[in-house]
Length: 377
Image (cartoon, rainbow, N blue to C red; front, side):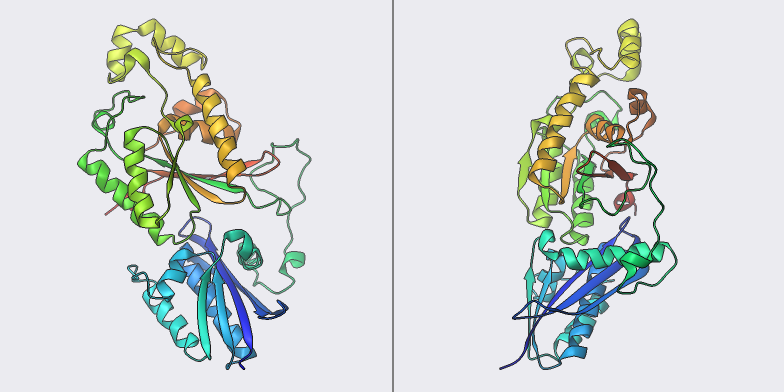
């Protein structure tokens, strides 16, 4: 009877593409004993490339241990698992040679099986990948004792939730919110106030939603859940993404846009001409609402509550939230602990992607803002 080995592999990119690395651990299949570890920073790459590199490294390490073994591959990348089993077609040309290399290595074993596992069950490989990226950031190769050898700056004393622009590694894995602004609508095209009016996407907006879907499909397995605003333009965007990722969509009305009341459908110039005093008060004070509308303070309160629900339901996971300009800006502002005027100093394009990590102790890190690289031709 063949020996059984288990390979746990992962890879990641801080930016997608960005500084990337992979990690893999090989275990005795029956006892779970760790037989080998490997990790490496690989420069600038996407999540998918890093994940495939982790798979290849794991297979090579297993081959060095026992070429005749039966091997089970465990990864939290659904894309890699589905592509390697042949259930999904490989559409990204950058992944084709990596998949071919992995298949060639797999052919040398008695048998190879692939299994998708939740991220928390792939924590060892994830840790190795992050160690490799950390070591690369210091200009050093990863070695098995990298966690002890890579120096980290001593943190200053800060009250809970007020860490500076880096986060100590001792903290648990954050809950990541990938914040997506919906695709184009007629009102966004004409730069009009678009609040709770239930309008749909334009043809261009639908194409932007599809581009978002392709972006996240290419990120293979990096999204664990999808939450959307209840408004039609967000739901249509979320539906395109969910179809590509084969994930269900949770609707949370707390992520809807601000209700602009009597200003709905008007341009800024229209409002300035018709309600000059009300507009000035609204811009100066977040507790002031447009006539028959909702204040930014009220929006913030419900967005906070919805964020709390996401973090409680998906701790340490990556959640894609399809929403609107004000909720995205509000979450970024809260993460930065910025004053309310920061809302007016951020620009968000339709179909853009932003990203915030939320830690258990109240700290937060903004990793991405208004990224529209997937929309460029």
